[in-house]
Amino acid sequence: MSSMVERVARAFADKTYAGGSEVWDTLQEYERTAFYEGARAAILEMRSPTEEMLIKSPVPAIVMPGDTSSYGDWWRAMIDAALEHSQK
Image (cartoon, rainbow, N blue to C red; front, top):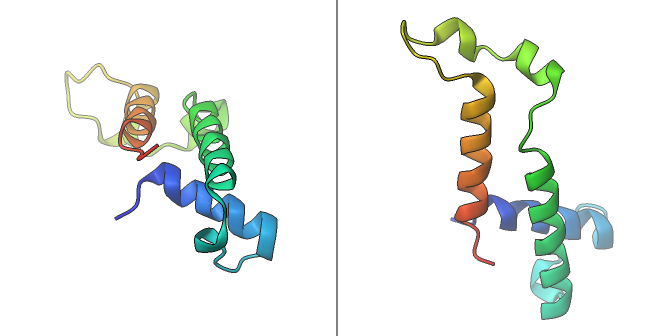
């Protein structure tokens, strides 16, 4: 299974070069590296949820009694995990 960073990098490449077709295997290494860097930057930027995201989150409604974590904490942990498990 590919990492989230690779999935985003591939999506960027597909939209950039072929309007949605699979092009990843035809790219040069420097092109893949550029898409990986762009994907990491985009995912990192998403680390801080927007106010709209926090308002729409179902998580506060299902948090267990006594749990002081917030949806923002959970969101950042998931983004951090996606970045940690990337191949590049």
